[in-house]
Length: 434
Image (cartoon, rainbow, N blue to C red; front, side, top):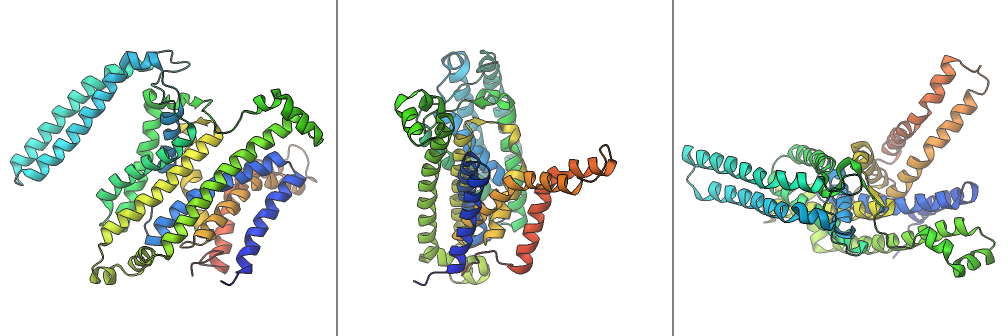
């Protein structure tokens, strides 16, 4: 196997950028960029499976990331006993009734002869079922949200280890992808884009408004962590003496060690996912997916079930994105539904895939690291640039105030410039598909 020194050089450049951040700014910042770069690489890997393998245009990446974050709350937060006593069982019953109404409606549609009678029966069944569901659900939610709303006001989770939340996040995202795919796949590609965009906004709106599930906009903070707390390390005499032996401040050292712990966990997950992705891409299944992407008509003529294969890869890619969302929420230590914005959690991930090279797993990983680095560093760089440009201007000048105030927009401007440069000089990405 011939080494591609250009690709190795690109990854080395990213490594140098992160090391330079540590040497000239702070190692805490460098490790923060590294950790979010690892998470971003996983998200980009999931989108690359959908677009690079199969040409599926998913505009709802944010929704699958948010479902991954919700999985951390549902899985790892301890259950709130008072809330469960107040209405937990009734909420479960209501959700089961809602599921039964949906399944019953499907059976009516399938089994009855098409016509006015079927339409009338379906409408009556769904309307009655909806009111029964709300009759059970609404009082239970009010009782749960009334339980110490300043601190809890929700059911909590299962109290399981937080690492289990990562595959659960993938499972939640995969379930949502299955529901979307069964509806929209097989139709024109713009239907999938519209469906994913709509579902994404619905998921975030649900997380903001359903306080009983995850406290809504009141947020859930202090989520369990898979690594030690900094304060616990600082209280450990062994750790303090070890840090002082290296000539380091124990407070700074504790933060660095914790971030290195996260980096180790994230790196293991990324390596596993990229190994699995590479094996799949090089297998007969991967070759079939690329054949379907390049010419669906020819693939169907060869007997391939295009819709089924699209559903497979859509579910797999969404599951990987959901895992990345759960990892990000674990790293943050809190879930804030109001922070899920399409610009950050859909557009930016797409930029990572396009810049890195769609259809190439290593390109998606490179794009995740590179774009995240610039996303973090461009704003302070822009502020410094504007201060240099306006140094000779009089204080209070309208132009100076305008330029200094516009420095915050350098982040979006730079993302656009990077995309234009890559599309102009390397249209297939920095590491194109072979």
